[in-house]
Length: 248
Image (cartoon, rainbow, N blue to C red; front, side, top):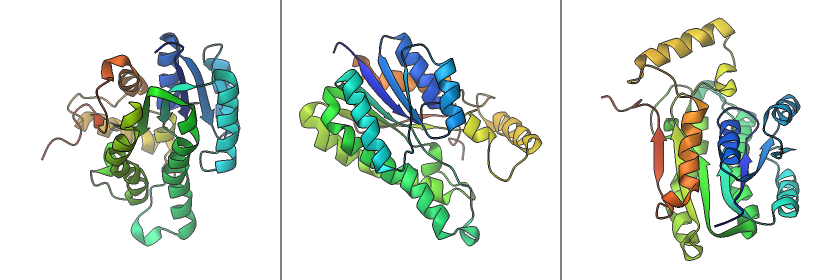
């Protein structure tokens, strides 16, 4: 396919931003979305010239309609959709409330699902869809039930979606990062900077590779799934974790 174009939700920082940089360097037209004004402003300053940066709430279907309209006007069609936007709200069962539940599932599940629904008419035959899930969806972590459930819901949809999209040769796959050093991780609610630094250091020591993931690690995997090199790969989950979670 020529004239490659990608939309990345949650693309103004961390994994999404790194992916935007990688795809742009490989000749893609790229659009990214982000919710926080400061993140959007920084992305407009730091991302390569030509990357379209849009402010949008990933949980708002009205905002999604506006993003789709803008992308249609700028690019016409999409060859890659990276559903990466998400929130993490660590909370144990006894402390969870309805508002937190609704927020997490609205952004992580409903928002990403309907972004796919609304962008489907823009996706060219043979396009690639990549969904960020995370290893927490299939591995236990205290306080992670909401985030894991909201991401895991998408993971369970992927085999069925792969079959539905196969007649158009549109591929859909999941990428599941392990602990990755991103601004979201460094802004973990309820933890000070010293606590976060200690947590990251301890996590890195436990990893078989002795380090945390980097946004670029995930971006390269997404770029592969978007490429013709993965033209026969669909309905799969690729874990990018440096071996985290393999030990018994």
